[in-house]
Length: 387
Image (cartoon, rainbow, N blue to C red; front, side, top):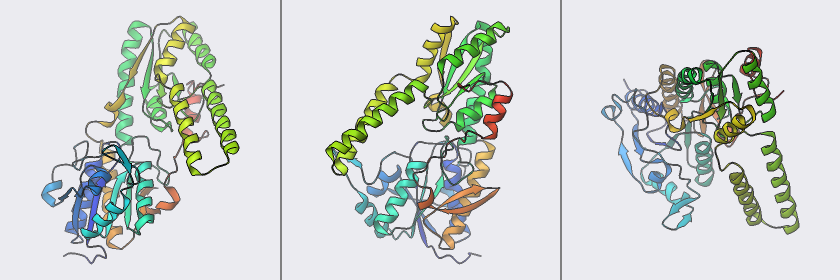
């Protein structure tokens, strides 16, 4: 017997980078929405671009059958933003087009599966046209605020841990330093988790600017004590103390310039662009490559780099991510049926709860410096790049 629902038709899209668990979440939402509440479910292809271009598929039971274990997303994805979408040779605000397409398709709520950017874009869409949205937290970086864990993180951490396990054998055989670069531009959850689980000797994350001399002394001390190899797990967004100082100077210079010009948002945008460009110049070469060269020169020990890249986002989701996505997806359908919109479905204390989008959109969840994993890492003798 179909239960009563305040929502009749929903749209689903996946946005941002692909991630293990997206298909499991699509399946959970679709099956529950159709079979329990009698909703119509439409899928927009390739994220917000598919919404603008009105590229739709009807999601049915047979559409989502068998996709629980599949990586990627059957809907495709993109990083396009509605308010800044490349159209030909121009960047155009396509928000009004998206709103009109939702109305023409009689969609009561748009369900968006994605990370921090998706949370912001969904909220922006709601505020622009009073459109109902609901989101699920997806990212291997685990940096979405308002939830204990994001789906995709567990799978990626296991992949990175497996890689560190395998690197131990070649590092031991050749007596090398091996620097393993792991994803995480603004937060170190993935590197910290995999580094601790894989027994990395050094773990470098964005939250703790590292001192290269501290790392060098640590590695030389290991060598003196008889350890003839070392594994370094480094987040792609890790920064040295010198990098932080350079960035601070650039930002200070930009603020001074902005005050002198004393002007509008256009000036602010230009200054932000300057900061972004300058930062890109600082980090043009991967951090893993830079630190490997430094360590080889300063320690005299042969160093090698392994960058896991998109391997971390590929393959089948772990059992935990499949169950997490099923919990989040079924809860999403339940909230939709109750007419609860403009929230993210969060996972806290073994429960799925709605969190207002306006409270979490645009906020990156970083690793607290007093987090138990950081404390435990130090207690077992892991170097985190600072004293």
